[in-house]
Image (cartoon, rainbow, N blue to C red; front, side, top):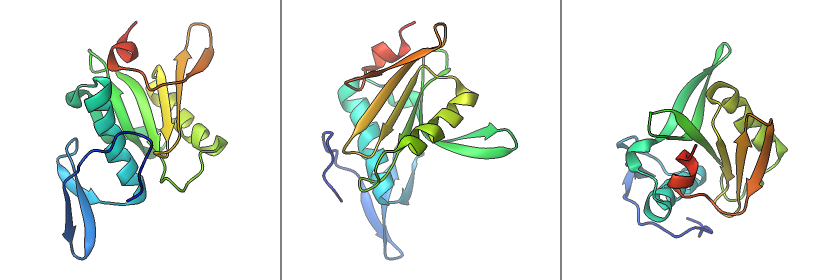
Length: 152
């Protein structure tokens, strides 16, 4: 798999039925190792190992209802009261991050109303903090530590 712009984590990878599968510690099962899954697994381990996110506060493939449809957020980070505080959307490294990716994560946020949005293809990461009181948002240079994410 491709080298990403975050520190690499050694993952449990097996071959089953001729296909690579990776163990997702958050879903507690092996899943197909696609390029997007490679980004997800490396990114969530980066959050835990380098940014202080408690593993028990991270959920992968979180189902939400959006109108009459069911959607899945790639990753949701929860705060102290089990309230969603961040959504992360992943793309494969070869996929360019475009406006449509931001529109996708924004639709998910209609339901969850989190303070932080991250979009990553493993090579480039965009992190946005939302201020609902002022109706504004700002992009930040670095992925925040967990303490920053849960701060009031």
